[in-house]
Amino acid sequence: MTDTDESTEPTGSDSQEATPSDGTDETPDLAAELDKWKACARKQENRAKENAEAAKRLAEIEDAEKTESQKLAEQLEQLKGENESLRIANLRS
Image (cartoon, rainbow, N blue to C red):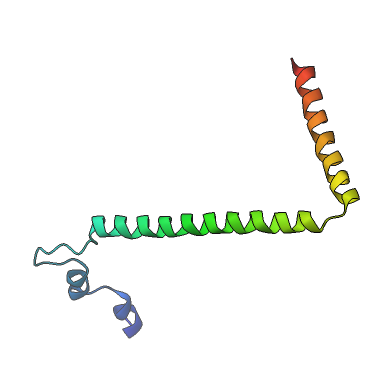
């Protein structure tokens, strides 16, 4: 055999290092892990709320800057969509 074949084979000492033999458990504390992920989730929820508020303010600013004809055109498109969905609902019933 060549030297490279021998170096790729695991030795007995490697397998002993992978599992603790002294009986200690090396798994992470599940309660601490749960608390960490809960904190991350709360942080993301707060961020989402802040972003929703900012998006609402931006929409209000954009609406204030629109001309009357732009507002009417958007309202017309919205009503057309509602009309179409009501027509489909009537045809199905």
